[in-house]
Length: 486
Figure 1 (cartoon, rainbow, N blue to C red):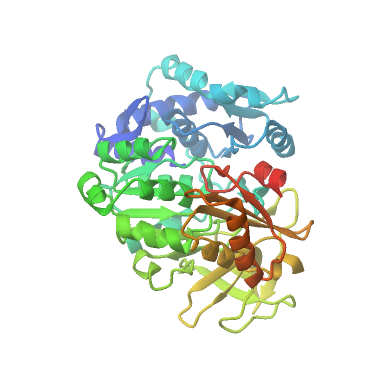
Figure 2 (cartoon, rainbow, N blue to C red):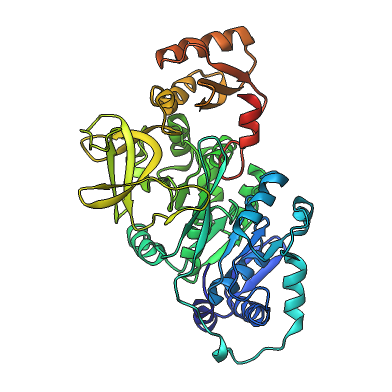
C-alpha cells in the first residue's frame, strides 16, 4: 500500500482533492494524511504489533486502506485473507503464519476461533477509536521504513485451493514505471476498485493510481446495476474487473449506454479467470477497445498482458510478457520447445516469489537463468504471443487435455451461459459445470457436451447442469464447490 511520505506529498499539492471514496464517505488527501498519521502513532506504540506481521479479513473500505497505509509506512506486513474461505481453512492459515495480530471486520468476526497467542482487533472499532484518540502533531517524527519486508501472498490453484507464498524484494517501482509509460496514466484518472483488496492485482493497481495522486473509489461488487451507478456518479476512467464481473457488466449494457453514461472510461484490466474468446468479443462490442487482459499472478505465475488492439487478432492468446519478464515453453526434461509446441510454461521474472510457505516451488536453470515452473501449459506463436491451453497440476492426465480450448468450444453452444471445466488429477476424471442460458432438455445438453468433449480426448466427463456457479469475486470457482461436485 502507499506510504505516508507519498500521502503527505499530495496532501500539500491538493489537500482538498478526494483521495479515497467509499459508501461511508470521502477522505480528502489532507484527511488521508491526518488519519494515517494517527494510526501510525498508535500502532508504533503497540508492543504486540511492533515488527510482527499482521493479517486481515475484510471487505474493501476506506478504513482498510488507512490501515494498509499505516502498516506499509512502518514496514510491517499486512496481508489479507480471502473471506470466502471456510472457517477451518482461515484458522489453519492464521496458525501456519503464526501471527500475533489479526484485524477483522464486524461481519466476519465469527469466522475465527480463539487462537492462542493471537489478538483479534475489530477494524471499524480500531480505526474509529484512533481517529478521536490523538491530536495532530508535527509529522516530522514519522519514520518511513524502506527496508525490504517479508510479505505473504496467497494464490489459488486450478482447483481453488489456497497456497501461501512469500517474497522479500518489492517489484512495484519497476512495474509501475512500465505501466504508467505504456498506458499514459496520470493524476487526473479516477480509479475504481471493486475486487477485494486481498487480491494481489487489485491492491497493486490501487497503489499505482494513489502514487499518481489520483482519486480511488472503493466499493465491493454487489451487482451490475450498482456498479454502473458508481461508475457513472464518479466518472470512473480506469478499473480492474475479473472476467466474472466483466461478463455481468457487459450483459447489461450496449454500446450506446457506454458512450452516454461512462464517457471517461478508457481502461479496464481484467484478470483472475479464463477470459473466454466469446466474452472477449462481447466485451469489445459493448465497451470498445479499452479492455486489456492480464494473465497469471505476479509472484507465482506467468505475467502477460494482451492489449485491447490485439484482442481480436489473437483472441485465444493471453498476450506477451510484461517488460522484464521472460517465458520459455519446456518439456518434461526441461528442454526448450519449438514454436507452436505445447509444453509447460516457465518464467524468469523480477516479480517471482521467493518460495511457498507450506511447500517448495519448482525452479529450474535455463540458459544460466532461474525460471519458475508454473502450473500453466501452452505454446507461443511466431509473433511471440502466448496461448495458454490449460492450468493444473503437473500430471500426465491433465497434460492430455486442452481445458481452455474445450471451454471455448462448449461456449459455442449458444444456449449455454457459462462453462467451467476442471480436470481432477487424483480421480482421473474431468468435471464440466455448465449454466444454460435458456431451457434445453438435459439429455440434449449432455449429448452435445459429450460429443465435443470426445474431440478433446475426454470420453466420460462428469457433467453438472447448474443454475449458478459459486465464483469468488476474484473469478475463481470456490474450491469447496469444486470438491463437492467432482
